[in-house]
Amino acid sequence: MKVEEIRALSDKEAVKQLEAAHQELFNLRSRLATKQLVNHREIRRVKKKIARLKTIITERELGIR
Image 1 (cartoon, rainbow, N blue to C red):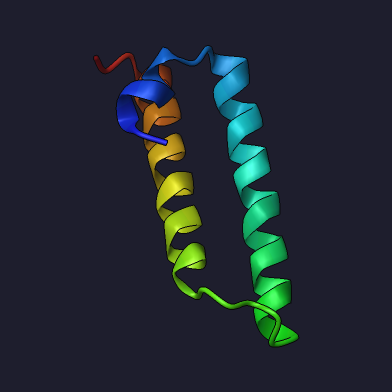
Image 2 (cartoon, rainbow, N blue to C red):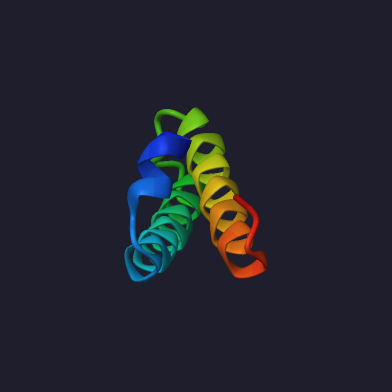
């Protein structure tokens, strides 16, 4: 998900996306621990998605942009 797409979301939708990303990261870590994860780069992708979402949510709270 790109920054422009995240900015187009409403506040509630952004929070829902953040919760879904955290759940996805949890699932990926579980699969990694049980050696079922094939592509390790998925964890990095989801972490970046979480960081982007948190940044946009914080910008909105502080009134930046």
